[in-house]
Image (cartoon, rainbow, N blue to C red; front, top):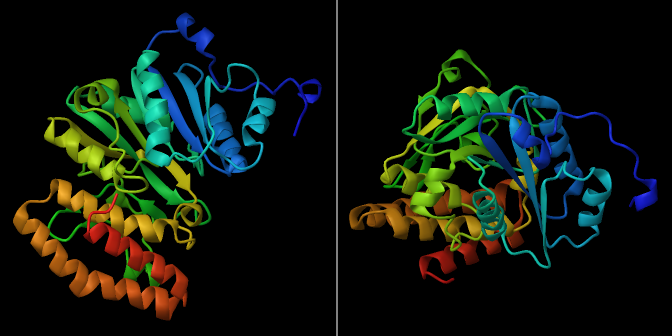
Length: 332
């Protein structure tokens, strides 16, 4: 860790200090990153923003350290000059992704930012991506949220996400190949069919830009979703409130899939648990019954085969099983 005397003057960056914003015109974007024991990823994400965003774009960076076990807050303070990280929030414990995000979003609204960009700390942004997102959302006042084309960090031409829909009859996501097709190695790569701006059902919070009016009208992220499905819930609430959800292929991001979906038991527990919560909140009675039939008739057994036979991780399967049980009975 650098001491104060050891901190060198940083190289010129394109980052904008909050004090500089009054000298420019145009909307101000709050870029939100949540750090938890991954400071190297967070630094790479911030640096990509500095170097890939145009000098004329006005933005501030809000980082929430969510109770990291090491001195990662000190590392961030030592690495960046005053103002490069516009706001740094330090939590004493891991409050969960959603609570930490809400802390940053509330601060952004309080400080008067026009737009909020949720950006995963284990991703890097492409050149001009923020400007493209702004172009789409500012081009139509009905658009409340817009997402980017997301690639795998380790396979730069392989698509990870490109705008998808929610099926409230099965609780599944309709879009790129997922589940068993992904496991069997049938990825989809960037093609012309993914090169058109389109309206979608939801965008992932790995990189999504939203106007402040959306948050003011429908409220913050639902903190009942500790990890996962909060972006689905937010987009569905926004859509019901009359906002359009868009996706643009011209804003590009590279995201570390493995860090977000590691077989550590965290996602495997919260994924099914929050899926049940989401369906109970948004599905009709008929859809909720159909979801149970699909989940326990098909999805559960595919997941069981994956954890026990494909990756041979019985302890991870037990975490999945507990998540299913807690979600089914509605445990908080």
